[in-house]
Amino acid sequence: MKRFALAIMCSVLATSALAAPKPCEELKAEIEAKIQAQGVTSYTLEIVGNDEAKDPNMVVGSCDNGTRKIVYQKNDE
Image (tube, rainbow, N blue to C red; front, side, top):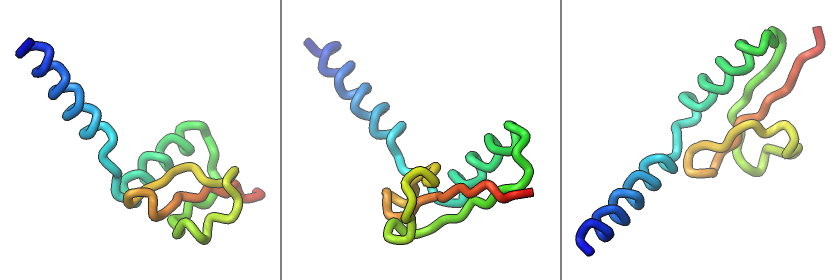
Protein backbone atom coordinates (compact mmCIF):
# COMPACT_ATOMS: atom_id res chain seq x y z
CA MET A 1 0.00 0.00 0.00
CA LYS A 2 2.87 2.37 0.77
CA ARG A 3 4.36 1.77 -2.68
CA PHE A 4 1.05 2.56 -4.33
CA ALA A 5 0.72 5.81 -2.37
CA LEU A 6 4.31 6.71 -3.23
CA ALA A 7 3.66 6.03 -6.93
CA ILE A 8 0.58 8.27 -6.86
CA MET A 9 2.50 11.08 -5.12
CA CYS A 10 5.36 10.87 -7.63
CA SER A 11 3.02 10.96 -10.61
CA VAL A 12 1.18 14.00 -9.21
CA LEU A 13 4.46 15.83 -8.67
CA ALA A 14 5.74 14.92 -12.13
CA THR A 15 2.50 16.06 -13.77
CA SER A 16 2.57 19.43 -12.03
CA ALA A 17 6.20 19.94 -13.01
CA LEU A 18 5.43 19.21 -16.66
CA ALA A 19 2.47 21.56 -16.66
CA ALA A 20 4.43 24.47 -15.22
CA PRO A 21 3.81 27.59 -17.30
CA LYS A 22 6.67 29.02 -19.33
CA PRO A 23 7.69 32.65 -19.45
CA CYS A 24 6.61 34.28 -22.73
CA GLU A 25 10.10 35.12 -23.96
CA GLU A 26 11.33 31.55 -23.41
CA LEU A 27 8.36 30.04 -25.24
CA LYS A 28 8.68 32.59 -28.06
CA ALA A 29 12.35 31.63 -28.52
CA GLU A 30 11.45 27.93 -28.73
CA ILE A 31 8.72 28.58 -31.30
CA GLU A 32 11.05 30.83 -33.28
CA ALA A 33 13.68 28.08 -33.43
CA LYS A 34 11.10 25.60 -34.76
CA ILE A 35 9.90 28.05 -37.41
CA GLN A 36 13.44 28.78 -38.58
CA ALA A 37 14.20 25.05 -38.70
CA GLN A 38 11.36 24.73 -41.23
CA GLY A 39 13.11 27.28 -43.47
CA VAL A 40 10.63 30.13 -42.99
CA THR A 41 12.50 33.40 -43.29
CA SER A 42 9.88 36.14 -43.33
CA TYR A 43 7.51 36.02 -40.37
CA THR A 44 6.43 37.89 -37.26
CA LEU A 45 5.97 36.49 -33.76
CA GLU A 46 4.28 38.80 -31.31
CA ILE A 47 3.33 38.43 -27.65
CA VAL A 48 -0.13 39.92 -27.03
CA GLY A 49 -2.80 39.89 -24.35
CA ASN A 50 -5.66 37.43 -24.66
CA ASP A 51 -8.06 40.16 -25.73
CA GLU A 52 -5.73 41.23 -28.57
CA ALA A 53 -5.52 37.76 -30.17
CA LYS A 54 -8.40 38.14 -32.62
CA ASP A 55 -7.74 35.21 -34.98
CA PRO A 56 -7.35 31.88 -33.12
CA ASN A 57 -5.72 30.36 -36.22
CA MET A 58 -2.75 32.69 -35.75
CA VAL A 59 -2.16 31.77 -32.08
CA VAL A 60 0.82 29.41 -31.75
CA GLY A 61 1.32 29.50 -27.99
CA SER A 62 -0.02 30.58 -24.62
CA CYS A 63 2.14 31.84 -21.77
CA ASP A 64 2.16 33.66 -18.43
CA ASN A 65 -0.42 31.28 -16.95
CA GLY A 66 -2.68 31.68 -19.99
CA THR A 67 -2.92 35.47 -19.75
CA ARG A 68 -0.96 36.15 -22.96
CA LYS A 69 -0.74 34.58 -26.41
CA ILE A 70 1.99 34.28 -29.02
CA VAL A 71 0.70 35.18 -32.47
CA TYR A 72 2.39 34.08 -35.72
CA GLN A 73 2.05 35.84 -39.03
CA LYS A 74 3.90 34.91 -42.20
CA ASN A 75 5.00 37.97 -44.12
CA ASP A 76 4.85 38.20 -47.90
CA GLU A 77 8.25 38.23 -49.49
